[in-house]
Length: 140
Image (cartoon, rainbow, N blue to C red; front, side, top):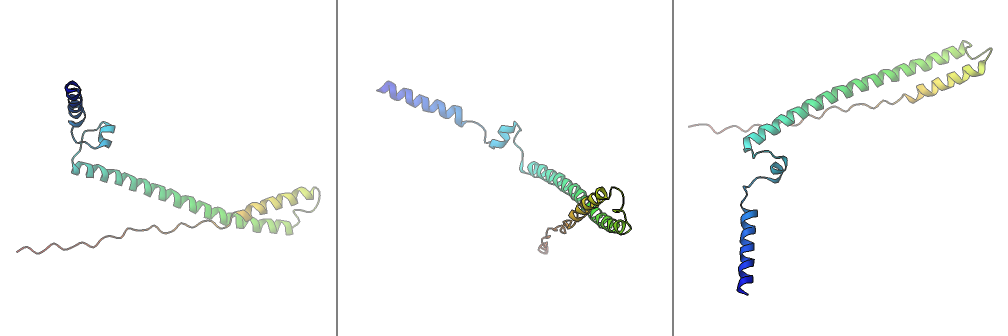
């Protein structure tokens, strides 16, 4: 019994020494293989990442605005096209030899022009509210 108690005790001590003696490093830093960072270095890293994400966001917003402007122009062009189709039909485009094919063409172009309505509008960007700065107490 004394031998069993001594073996269990030495096993517990060996486990505590092997598994409990490592430095206190966050699990994420250990997984990435990166050395532990100070708080100021971590804040600087996060600020850099935030600036990069803000830049990407602005680039995406510019692209979105350009795309919506393009779609708006397409919608306006479709309306002009519909007017031109109506005028060409009044002038006799769909009359005469092979008139059925021209009517099909006019119908198809009107269907296309009719679908290019209601371009979504881009909402105004939300600007984060800047917190009011607190005045530092006067020095005496």
